[in-house]
Every structure is written in structure tokens, then in C-alpha cells.
Image 1 (cartoon, rainbow, N blue to C red):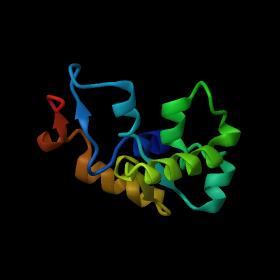
Image 2: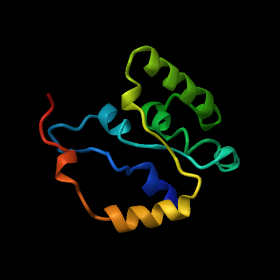
Image 3: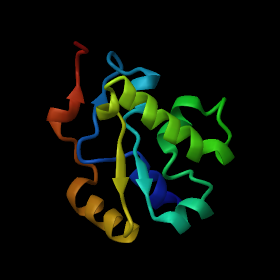
Image 4: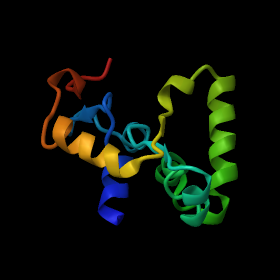
Length: 120
């Protein structure tokens, strides 16, 4: 369970891979993915899966019991600034099927188009 959740939080179809020269903490944080596993699973996990981007951005400032409210505030703030395209939320109600799909489609595969070699 933990491996599956961790893998899915850090992988998406359009996820970028940065080189040592282009990586920053913030860029990396926005390449993580909030996964909505449904209300019950989200609540039982203290919103660690659907609040994962916020966790990466502010892990020293936002405790897990505030992730839901903080994630909502992040989404609203980004929308106000026209930056909502940077935030990733993927509806993943059938996570066991999603991990199988990711395994077959993307395991150890790097789409060269998603590698950021220089920052413009």
C-alpha cells in the first residue's frame, strides 16, 4: 500500500524530469501529484494523498491535520493568480488499477519530451 501510494504521488503522464541544472525544490514539488482516492480513503489517510503537493511545498509549516484546508487555499490562490495549470490533482478511485496501468505504461520509462534540460 505505501509503495503504491508513494509511487502514484510522484508520477503522472505529463510529469517533468529535471536535470541537476534545472531542478529547484519548488519545481520538483509541483511535479508531485495530489491523488483523490475518494472521501473515505482521503479522510482515513489524513489527506496525505490528496494534499501531497502542499506537503512538499510546506512540510515544515503545515501539519497533516491541516492539509485539507491548506490544499484548498493553495488551489484557490493559484487560480486567483492564473497559475492553476501548475497544480496536479488526479482522480484515482481505483488505485490498484492505476498502479497496474502505470507499471505497464511507464515503469522505468522516461519520455524524453518531459526532460527539462534548460530553463527558459
